[in-house]
Length: 280
Image (cartoon, rainbow, N blue to C red; front, side, top):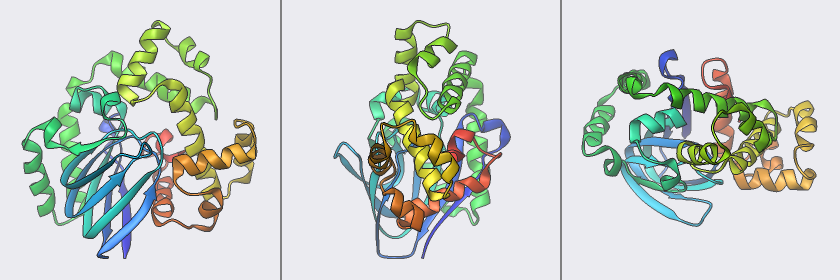
């Protein structure tokens, strides 16, 4: 049995965390593709995993793992029985918890202790002792709430601006982002790279494809007709969906790909988590 359950963060930390999730698998081996994502903090409560990124790099892990933003679909190979509590770390959450450039961790997964010190291992043991997912969620809310005072107003305003730009249209032009900011173009590019792990143009391309993937999975023909104009043609859209989502549009339509099918359950939290998360 493979199970993936999602939980909304508390309202006061939703600018730091996209969603919490508990992934469980009682099989001795499980492998699948996972769509491109934002940074993740993952606590492997049981079992181990090998994560392979779009650039060809692979990382084998147990325990607490910090995973940077990904530039394409990933491949996950799990040795079970497996249990993992995960946290989708939004750019503002990344900034205040790691105080490092996300670009340094793009398409990488490292032992979380390298960034957070050995204290992270105490958190891992606490989570392993939790009896319910709700206990884990309450712990995570408390941690990010304690970090919230570190969030600079200018960082919060910048990530809000970028997210609104990404949500403004299927393929938002870079000029639209620059028009929203009072910073120089060079400063905007540098800050987006630092917080999101990739340049604005690539970021827009990534979210365009993930939005299309979600529309395919939901059989939203009306939205797909609107989205196709954001690509060169339909074959281009199909290639981009496969690259960023890890499965073809046909597979999304028929529910192939266990992780792809389970990830789309995030839509059930619409209104409780960041719109950019449920839309992609």
